[in-house]
Image (cartoon, rainbow over all chains, first blue to last red):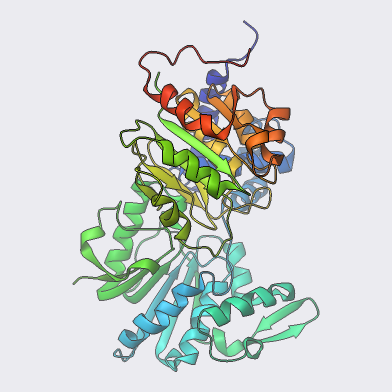
Length: 280
Length: 198
């Protein structure tokens, strides 16, 4: 029979995906082996479409021989959706429920894991500045992707997004005029340099790198959704071991510890906002 | 092989259509239902708690990696794509598809991948075309496809687009969809011969 059975094709494609992922790992050490399959597959497909490639196998051959091309694929496979004060109710809850706890500490270390292009890190810096806590804080903002970190470090964003960010800032309980935090220049805005003062940006891969400090707060929002449960448990082990006693963990709105091994080691601080507190 | 998962997509007019459809399903309904209803990204859990009043099946806003259990209704949360894996759900905040997040195409395509001929895709009333491509992929992978009769749809654009682009298995008035789902999912041994339009 000439016609390809749709089921066979589906199985064939699964093999292709596995080979590509294995190839990326063995050739470059990029480890997507425990990523959630469905979204990874979608991203591979949209990369094929953009590049005009006929199949995953063709992509694989090219990626294995061409490092620059592999890096381009890497950008295509990682997600960088973010905004300042994304999910404003999270920041509101942080202000009301977490800040009072942080006030009791002489020095506060915060790890923002998977910070992407930095908008949510600067949002936290603004919040802490308004709460007059920022001078006592150090924020470690990490991402596995060097390219997005560069954007994060620069703190320069398209001016057209400021209207949306202003709305979110206000909903998040912002106390000033949002435009105080940036200087507009043509099509871009530059965030006020004082916001960056207490932030250390650095490369860190949640899949392969270990703990590098002890933190009072770890924020990791909408990053773990791209991992399967094996990898989620691995990262939660890392987070647990990197949090001090009674340290605070903030996840994305639809993320949960419920389906991990770490559920019982935390208590809910603000349930609806996925703010947890390490029990001991 | 029995149907295990029913993926439902709808936009404009979806709320009242879902009320009718879900309200008709019995408590011991043996398949899981995954629903994308286009909604504003800042809408909260009001949608699922509203619909809970009209159905005997437990309604959830999906949390990442939640298991797919028979007899449960799972809603895509606002501003997240809902993806089906084998036995559980994943979420993503990838860019919107056809301006939508959650997108019906994303739900249907991942359903086609993970459940193929064990899945049913249902497109209800809607004012755009998100879901048509996903339905066509589900059909190609051996899934059963059902579209609401446009004459009974508050907004017929989506059903019409689906009928024009996909050789759907069944076109049914809204009131007939739930009874049909019950029949498809509960009649023993009847799954190999699909009902067709001919």
